[in-house]
Image (cartoon, rainbow, N blue to C red; front, side, top):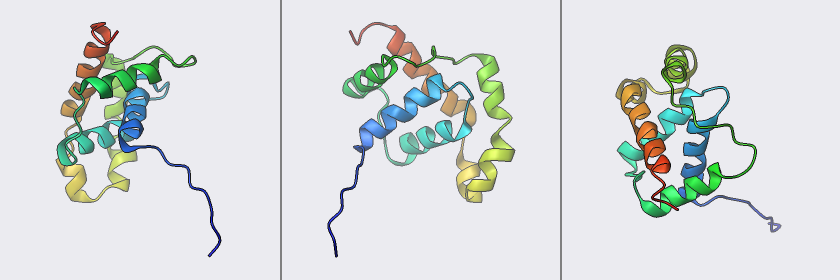
Length: 120
């Protein structure tokens, strides 16, 4: 079998990128919230970990990101995607376990920590 190169991202960096997307995506995507909610509840991702937050901050500092948006309008747009975009791609049990309010609180908490300037 011939040798080939595979480019991959370390798991924590992939989730840091997911947080960046959840906070700054111009067109909100419910899949971002689901992925983070699942990672926290099933994989025990620690969104409060200092090193993880530093990685998210570095991703947010890259030029070209839009400002963080965790507004009520943003949340409402995400809610409109539950049935049409999330339910069709999930098993019923996974969809039923998803708590959109809880997921939104997760990214809201991350945004607050990033705004605290504690990360330097």
